[in-house]
Length: 330
Image 1 (cartoon, rainbow, N blue to C red):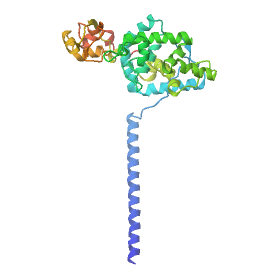
Image 2 (tube, helix red, strand yellow; image 1 turned 135 degrees about the vertical axis):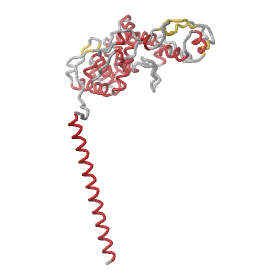
Image 3 (cartoon, rainbow, N blue to C red; image 1 turned 90 degrees about the horizontal axis):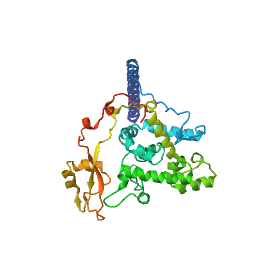
Image 4 (cartoon, rainbow, N blue to C red; image 1 turned 90 degrees about the vertical axis):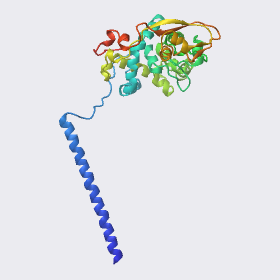
């Protein structure tokens, strides 16, 4: 009898706990619905997530992109979604582009390379002197051997892959070489990622007539679409939710040139003698990778120092850079 009473008590306890849990859950749901109702009435709602706008037509360096092919269209769509909703990295690319495109664009033009290749530089490194897991380096992500092939000095003290002017010149030579053999800027861009042999071997095996119709590894399959998507977003920022003003972006840093020569040069002392901090000196000359330049070959190098006007924002920004009008493209 005692056991029977204990069993009944236990069952009643379980039922009571279940009812209490149900009441609490119902109460919380009601409170949540009430809060949602308040937000709706106050005009505050959850953010609306839209699919990015796909252009009707698009080209790369004047070469038409076959957007009527479903997998081409979907490949571009994927990268547009990535850049549209990867706000942090895309925003930083916009900010840096305002500083570095004025350096890159004239070098591309001088060498006869289409301006669209500046977007290749963006997707390679986000316009930073990045180091990849494979040890590619700099804005244009040169491997050591490739950089040296195109006359970039790379050693324990100097790495010209981190010199934006020198590495852009080298990239122009590389791209021009690829184009002369492949006959297509799109193919040259893809080969910049996977190598000329990697692209042509696959095209030949598959009897494919273009990059867009060739089955490639995942990275190269996305590569040109990433360039195209970055171009589209940067040329139509407001269509993708980026409302940016020149005053929000990073202005070019005015500099003057100085000569660095001699052997066993202490760069702390060199910076101090030239009236700049060591930090600023290294910021402006990231291709120097040492604190003391032994310079066994006794070369002379041109280094950048801040302009006489200084590095304060008020001195760096021109009247154009202070504008509060939204930019239409970059």
